[in-house]
Each structure stands twice: as C-alpha cells, then as structure tokens.
Length: 433
Image 1: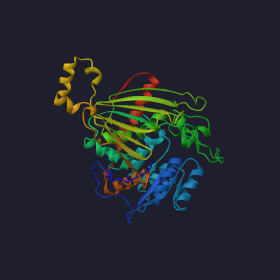
Image 2 (image 1 turned 30 degrees about the horizontal axis):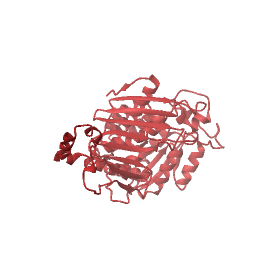
Image 3 (image 1 turned 135 degrees about the horizontal axis):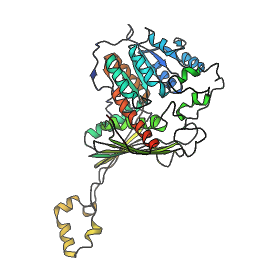
Image 4 (image 1 turned 45 degrees about the vertical axis):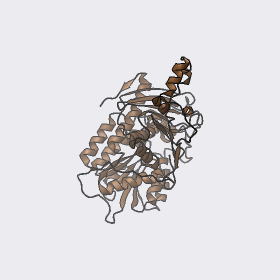
C-alpha cells in the first residue's frame, strides 16, 4: 500500500471531515512554514523525517530521542539545523515548535500526546494511537479541551487506493458489503521486529530510564530498547502494529465505527525465545452495520495468503494489494440445472420457458456474449507517507480536524486492544462505549 496516485483517474478524497476548530488561525511561523519537532527518532520516525524535510512548507526544528545515534543521524537529515533536546518536555516548551511528530514506542503515546496538547502543539501521532483501551478516550478528551489538531499516522488512509475503494462503495458498485478479509503476513526475523542493533548502543549512548518512562522498571536491555514490539510492556504486538493498519483502511472505506464483538486466537509458534507477543493471530470482528471482518497475520509464511485487503459485496469484490486496486464483478446468475433436471420433463421445459427464469438463470440459456469484467488501477507518484503528512499540514493550516482524527484513531486502536484481550482471556469481547 506504499505506492501512490492512480494511473487511471482517481479522486483523492483525502483530508477532511471538516470538524472546524474554534481557533481561526493556524500557529505557523510568520513565513507560513510549519515548524515541527520529532519526539522519537527511530526507524519509522526517520522515514517521516525524510518526507518532512522534503516538503516545501515544513521546517524540522527540534529532535528528541533516547539513543544518541538516532539523534545524530536525524540532525544530519535536517542539514544540522534542528535543535536536539534530551527531554521531550523541553522540546514541547519551545515557542519555536508549532507541531510535533510523536513516533515513540506505544507505551509513551498517551502521556506525550496529552503533554503536547497541554503545550498547545498540534500532533502527528504514529499508530496505534493508544497503548491501552482507556488511553483512547483520554486523548480524545484532551484534543477537545485543547482545540488542537491531532492526526493518527496510519498513512494508508490517505492512499488513492482507499479513496477509490470508498468512492466505489458509496456508488453502490459492490452492492451490499457484508465481509472483509485482510492479512498482513511476513516471514523472517526483520518482519518479526528482530531488527539489527547498532554496534555503538550501550548505557553510554542509550538513556534507558527515558525509554522506560511509564513502563515497569527493568534492567538495561538493548533487545527491549530496539525490539520493543516483541514485549507486552511497550506494545500490543501484531494487533497494534499491523492490524491497526488494516482496520483503519476498511473503517475509512466503509465508514465503519466500532465492532460489537471480537473473537481472536493467537500463539507463538516460532519466536518463543524472543517474543512475549504472539507471532500468529487470527481474529473476527463483527460490526453492527452488518459487516464481519476476518483478520490474519503470521510471521511464519509470507506467500501462502497474500497480504492485503478484500472487501466483498453482493455485486462485486475489491482487492487492494501490491500497490493496486482490482474490482471483480459477481457473476450475477443462478444455475439450477442440477435440480431442475430431476423434475418431470414437461415441468423442466415449462420452467425454462418462463421469461423470469430466463432473465436470471445461467448464461448458458442465452446466446454467446461478452460480460463486463474486472477493472484494475495501479498507483504511482508520491507515496502515502507524503500524502498523509501533507494532509496533516493542511489540517494544521486550515484548523480542520483530519479524517484520521483522535476519534478515528481510538476506534482503530480499540479493535486491536479487543483482539489482544480476546486472546489473553480466551473469550469473546464486547465493545464498551
């Protein structure tokens, strides 16, 4: 889902649920350039940082991280112009910062987001928005109190694929949608978050206490610092890291809110020595709008079930994968030959003589003809990171909340928390409003 702009015509219905802020003007620099700081400068943050420094109306002016190696590299990406802060609260207190990108481990998200809102900063908050279910409403309320802009960073929501899918669904092209199937599979240590650890990482270059923050106190551990997604103390594993992307995509495409019930199963088959969280998860999410979503992820096979999203309706299906979108119409006919052939011959002939039957039965009753087939679109141009960040910048300047606002982010993350709760408690979990 990381290649953009359809080569066929696609309406990019990107930012904007048009929830107007009570503040009329954006807090941008006098030059109308948005001055941003990065709280957290890990691998994902560097991807966002590289996009931000390329944007014509953004200046990256501040950086903060618990590992000096990341900070040095991040500052180099700003041409040495950004100010480095040891404590994120000092960064938030700086009047030269208009907005912040928070790209830290999940367990810091609520604390940092609420602190940033209290400091009157707008926020681009990496997914998942929350580390625990209760964190979501707290962030939503903090946004309301502050009148600031918060956009969650599941960048596929701004993709042309999802925009086109949403357009087709709203036009009724798929008919009644009742099923979603989605997968995010990987195979290999890197896909399972066992990233290489920099050779200079040590107690001298890593601020362990700063990393831990609100998490349980533990001895210095580079595996936990650089591979934090493997541990319950800092992450929700597959559900919060990968399912949140899938959920965000189909929530936006279908205008879904929250599942009424969730049931899930997960286990660790391959990474028992390194992971606390499961390496394989399957989940069913049932929505009151009449849609069931089936989600799966494994770190043990990448090819058997293609990663991506399928939206299934009574008139057709949409498949989003590999940077493209494909619509396939349903055949739209019945074939009762195997039943009617057991009738008396006269009854069979009378059945097929009925014009109503001829209108709906199998094509074999009609002369040869071409039937409208599948249609596909491919994406190109700027990637979703760029588009999503551009939408954030636009929201900040126009003071309108983005599509992937705090309420959206809470509902998507809550799905992941319900999946994990179902796995750990071995029961069906119901949505609590």
